[in-house]
Image (cartoon, rainbow, N blue to C red; front, top):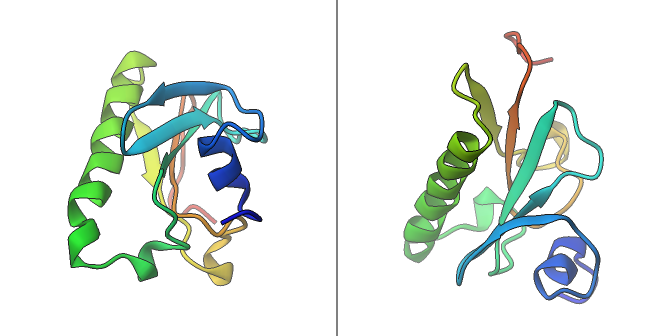
Length: 113
């Protein structure tokens, strides 16, 4: 998807502070962090949102969260962290490429807002 910012990051056509990558996903620092640690884990495969995921994408979705857990450990977020996916405009999704946020390094409250 040539107009997708995250596809451009995955393809190294746009800058990002990449912290992890493998054959399925790329993780990088959020440009507008909402916590001391704010990373995004995106699949290399373009899916606009979780709604687009199909049964064959289940291993990829699981891998996104496995990488998120690994990055949380590497960033020493043992006191806790938040993972989330914004799905659609009412949830605050602003980039239409599925991504998992990892937020940590501060106290979070519920409900989130």
